[in-house]
Amino acid sequence: MSKKPLLSVKKLSVEIHKKGIDNGKDVLIPVDQISFDIFPGEICGLVGKSGCGKTLTALSITGLLPHSARNAGSINFCGLELLTLSEKELCDVRGRQIAMIFQEPGSSLNPLMKTGKQITESLEIHFPQNNRRQNRLKAIELMKKLGLKNAEYLMETYPFMLSGGMCQRVMIALAMICGPGLLIADEPTTSLDIKTQSQIIELLKTINRETGTAMLFISHDLGIIRDLCGRVLVMHCGKIVEQGITEEVFTSPGHEYTRSLLKEQT
Image 1: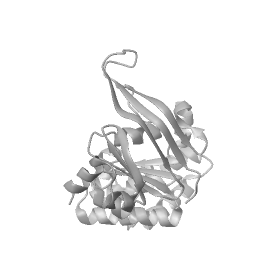
Image 2: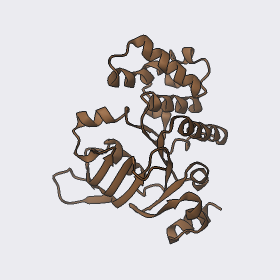
Image 3: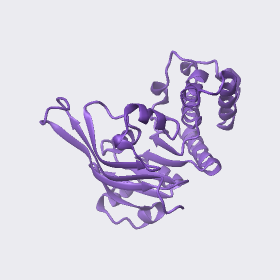
């Protein structure tokens, strides 16, 4: 593993202003002074119960926080300080260098847009020199690699015509189409049955092994984290309370909260 991180988060906090950004009252801090690194080619897990700040951490990295939220601290990706970028500059990073897979593929995909168009749209934005035929062929090739049979036919379908597992594979295709260096997966298997969950996890392993794409995998499921992730970050009440090599953390947890999570899932 490279000693130089791909992504370095330092003292990141998220404030939620319940009555608007200019009102100093009713401020919540769901993410509080967290620091961690993600290294090239690794799969790092972020685990904790619902409401602990996992998703807000991911949205901070991708610049997709709601308007009522404000960041403080530092998020450095390949030398770029993401928190100082304009929205246009963030759009250049988002999709092309950092991509995200959301928890509910059915609600994340546009129900009124054909599947193929949604996958190629990112190529059209980030690689305007490509023609439509190039984009289509690249999308079909990627879909086939991701186990989507009849890819040519699926390009012409709408999301509501697909199963949950197929929708999630489409979401992965959409995220991977521009070859990002970092993939953030926010609870990508929660809404799937056990068999499909296993298939998606194996697919993410294959992507990591064959492309070297680093991943931040967010989950409340310690079993999946243990199976997939080389390192783990344990989050509780907006803070990272423990981090380290996954097997070491789960075998000899140093924090009481980690021990309680492990006890609950045995």
